[in-house]
Image 1 (cartoon, rainbow, N blue to C red):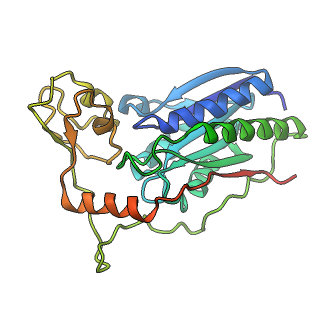
Image 2: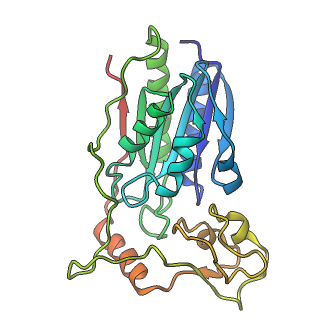
Length: 278
């Protein structure tokens, strides 16, 4: 197939999904001798516009994994604003060293419903948004090498395609999709952190406005960063990006869940890669 443009398309609060998607797209564009373009739909205003692709495009499409699934706040955009136009697609999810559960199969199915053709897919590991310990520093050099190899093999697959694929790449996951992962305490009682929001140490805060600009939901008041009138999806863009280290969470349930994850999933999780069977 003749691919003219390789797109890197991503939602990425703390930059790890962006790093992954762009690395794979760069490798594919180089191997296919195609133009490279980017589309970042992390800012809320970016999700107001439709995005249209064509059969001359290859779209590397990435989201983080939240509670084992594609973030539910993205579903209206992903199912309503993407026009695939018969383009080839590579769904990519980034998980925080626990598990990607059904996120990859969910994203694959969404893209297929948008009239894209998923022919390869991957789940890579990035530092967990809640933690500086869980998956610390990932994606690292070992991950980047696997991304390059994934891009190389995917480009080879595309070069061998006789035409538009008539089936999708098979990936790990369940259908119907499992419920979102629910954190629990030691007694097995669910921990609800949906309404938890970050706090601000106003003695440290310089009023630079970074957190308000970085919030993918537009939920932080730029005039008073201690106010979060909108929803918080716990992406931690504000916490990890604040140059003064002024943003933090102090909710007991949130902190319990963070420490539980750090203890239970300290091992190095491996990426999982999938290609369309010939």
